[in-house]
View 1 (cartoon, rainbow, N blue to C red):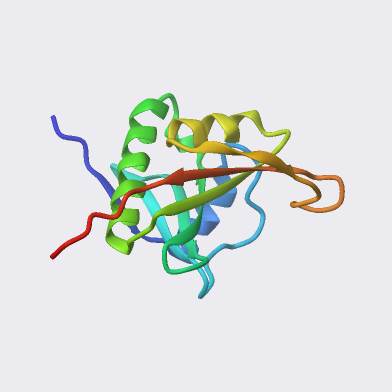
View 2: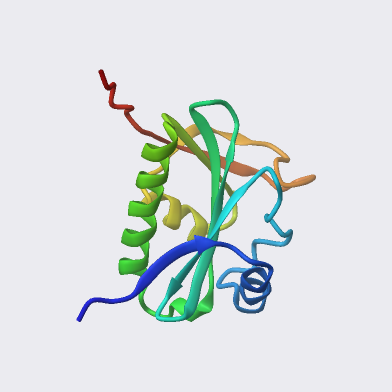
Length: 148
């Protein structure tokens, strides 16, 4: 049986569900802003997570992902679906460099970005998330296919 999964534009209701069911209490501010293109990841009517992208340059963007506890034990298929969505979004937008950051003391976040194909950039960003709260920068590179 084919499972019904969709990515759609994130709504305020999705944000409220995300905050009520966040798997790891990390996302505090509503990322739905004009600077982000946000998405909801829904599976059979249940919100598994939300995420988004923010352009930095024409070929570089930040991304974020926050999962809900509604995902249950379905991490592996969820990682695959999110990874495929990231790849397609980057292809559609001509992204060469996709960046993400994870608080240094958040092992589940480090595991998530690794499963999504990101690699540590190689240095710690001191005080990135506030005084005394460091973060690791992660990056994933994509190739743009030339046409013509």
